[in-house]
Image (tube, rainbow, N blue to C red; front, top):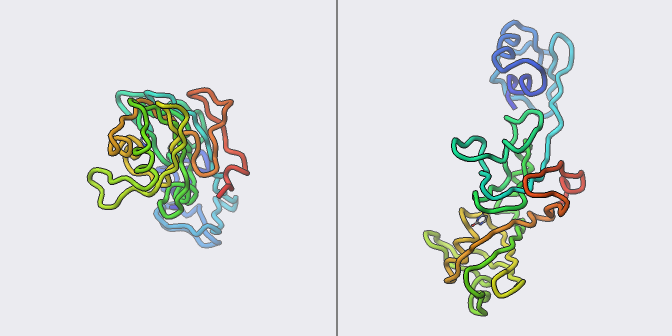
Length: 229
Ligand code: URA
C-alpha cells in the first residue's frame, strides 16, 4: 500500500493532509523520515506520526444478499449500487469479489483485501459457484449432457469447463461452475438452446449465502468463512 493511502485510511487525515504532514517531515517509516506519499510500504513496515504508530486497519469481509435491480458497481447514475446498501467504515477501499448482473440475486462478497478476492475469483483456483437457474423451457437430457461436458460459448476460443447440473424441477436447475466469464450462466444456457429467466447465486467456494439474510441485507463473514479454501 502507498504511504499516503495508509495514512488516509488509518487516521482522520485526508490524502491531501497526509501528503502535507509527510512533506513536513512528521512521518517516519522504519525510523527514517519519509519523503513521499507515493512510497510503497512493505507489509511489516513500521509507520509513525511524530512517534505514534499508524496501523493498517483490519481488513473487512462482507456477504450481501443482492436484490434484483441493484448493480455491482461503485457508482451508478441510474440504479442503486451494492455500496448504497452498506454502512461500513472506509467504504472507498471496498470492492466486489465476483460481480452479478443487475437482474441476478444472491451472494455477493465484498472486501478490501485484494489478495483474498483474487484467490476467490481467480480462474486458477477454480472455486465453485452455485446458481439456482429458472428456465424458459424444460431442461432436456441433451442440454444437461452438453452443460456437463462443456459448452462452446459465442466469442470464446475454448469450451466452458464442465458444469455440475442438478435438476430441481422441469424449469429449474442448480448449476455449479468454476469459471466467472461475463454473463456466463446466461450464455451457457443460451448455447444449449434454453433461456434463463431468473438467476440466483447460492454459494461461492465454500461460502454459502446465509439463509437468515433477506434480500438487501448483509453481514460480516465469520473467521471460518474468511479462511475457507
Ligand atoms: N452468470 C450470469 O449470466 N450472470 C450472473 O450474474 C452471474 C453468472
